[in-house]
Amino acid sequence: MSAPRDVVVTGLGAITPSGLSAELLWQSVSQGRSAIGRLEGDEFDGLPVRIGGQVRGFDPEAVLERNLVRRLSPVQHWALAAAEEALGQAGALGTEPPWDPARVSVIAGTGSGPVDAMQQATRLLDSRGPRAVPLTLSMHGAPDAAAALLSQRHGLRGPAQGVSATCASGTIALGEGLRRIRHGYADAVLVVGMEDCLNGVNLSSNANLRALATGHDDDPAAASRPFDRARTGFVMSAGAAALVLESAEHATARGAAPLARVAGFGASSDAHHPTAPHPQGRGAAQAIRDCLADAGAGPADVGHINAHGTGTPAGDAAELLAFEAALGAAAHTIPISATKSLTGHLLGASGAVEAVLSILALRDGLLPPTLNLDDPEFPDWDIVTGTARPLRVNSVLSTSFGFGGHNAAVLLARADEGGTP
Image (cartoon, rainbow, N blue to C red; front, side):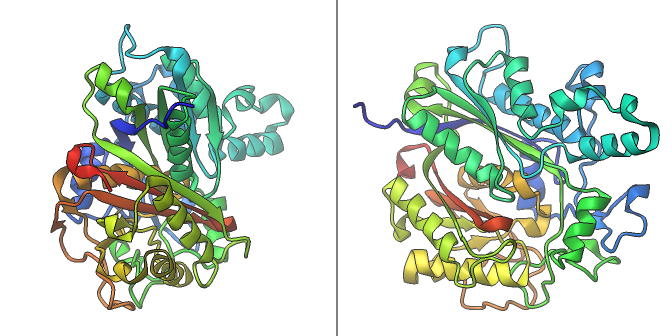
């Protein structure tokens, strides 16, 4: 049996509230600018929570054909646009693909998929009857539809599928892409994380769960407060991010410049509760330990952590306990950033967005700040606050946890010779 192959990232893309490209996303986050504001639109009138992170200024017709724009949901527009950016950076757009199309897979990670399409179709059925339900719902209304659309759009003939594990979806999609290349099932994988639950139904459900941040209508940027004593919940956002993964040997052979290496991945389930994390972070710690073992790394090899850090009282506390359980005493010395304080929580897309941020932090030697940490509940942890911290590290551990007890962690490392964790 041949040895497992190293996996590198050769392209990044993003459409988010913080910016309409990977670079603009990074500029906004690294400069400490919040993307959270009052939600604009009549559908948000009367809701208990009216703040979030909306994608603004995006023109889908600048990327997609008009007939496709009409048929698809905004979340799919964003996914296709982010993928286009990532493929472009990877040098994989054009008439001569740099790889065998049959050896390229597509994985779309999303917690809910195009939920707006189903909600709109239900309203049409109720108001106008069966004939009014769009036939495109059967083709484009499922969580896996974006993966199928991307495979068709770019002629990628390897397996195309959706991965759904609530807020861990993007990270699990990335990990499954790593495994697919590492073990020889593909030469490259296009990974997309996507989510848009900014609608009355999903916002109301999460508000009724008391999961959303409250009390900041006059200052939305202050609402997301990971690890702060005054935190009250997460702030929902929407968007998409994409990464092109390749085997290192394939990237080298075609002259592509790796942006980072995907060193390890781990996932687990809490098997505990529908919404609450295990109070001791049991499953999260298992995912982190498995990730490091997969990378052949130890706690001393982790240079930075991009935490899940949603700002929920139970979630933040359990996450730090998980870090302590998995990393031991070293956990308190590793600088931690909680970038959802700036972007909001993109749910199933968050793992992909935070992988992009982690890779650009590695590139620039700059650790992004955590916003609104004015009264730390956990003062003995090294959480980056105020402004970004200049620090060149070799690796970033990015964690994602979700309702249902889904846990995932990925270790991203510099692609040069100094990047071996």
